[in-house]
Image (cartoon, rainbow, N blue to C red; front, side, top):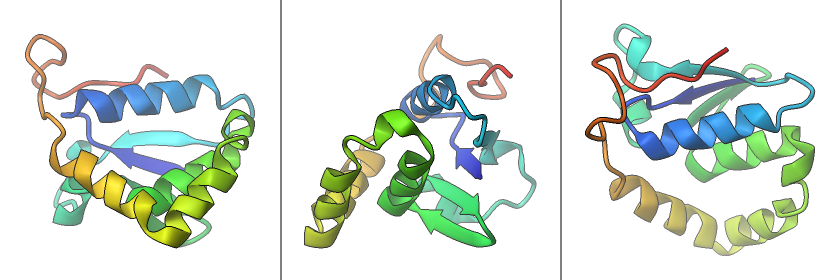
Length: 116
């Protein structure tokens, strides 16, 4: 599973670092979409995950990541409920629209990085 995160977003980078720490089975790989030449503009608006030849975006991407991380299995049923009633996508989009990019004194000119 490849997680394409926004390295210009401290919240996105922090979330990816957290997921990496709890990925005990090393099933996740992380890549800043900012390092990809001619990346799809949709990646600027939401998290993208590529897994088993399929793309997942936004709240669906978070659910897919959570399915790979045993610690995230506890809130997973609630996430599915939120997805079903539309609240998950609503909250995700609200947060994504209001996030801050390139935090001052937090990242270098290439964005924030996740150490290997």
